[in-house]
Image (cartoon, rainbow, N blue to C red):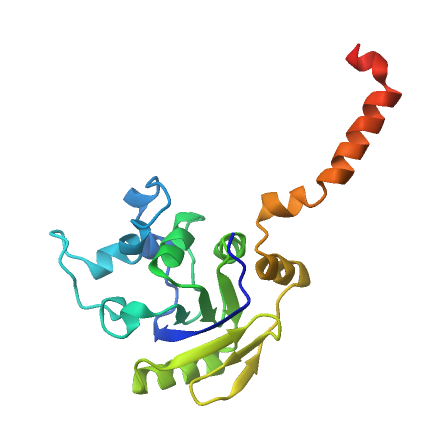
Length: 202
């Protein structure tokens, strides 16, 4: 997966708690092969009419249609465990979601797909969203190595992340790539095992 190091980008405020995965990716799209089509799947039923025309939605409006960061409310990504919800965010262009809390499975799916979930407290998130509402097009900077978010007014907010999650994001390691880092050790063990138990392979 693509490494995540730093990003400075337009951020979109979503002032709504409990945004669930069925809103991020409606059920009927779950089996769509991952790719650019997911950019329109994100919030599809809230962004588009049946004829494909756009509804009024923050992610359809300039400049938020170019956002790469979302500042959300509590319990982001609740509902079903569908990984396609993260595909939709990622293919739209979102690389980081900042929220007071995330649903656990969605949080893990974000990490596994190179999208950084950042937990800040409710007051911090509300202050960030207020800045973004008052000054559309404002950018936020996120530095994973330093574990900081710098808001539109230049104020820095620290965040916590598990060191293994941090390493994987910085180095672009999904679960398979991380496992393959130990390939030499696996191969050595297998060779030794076969040598010691040659009778099993005769």
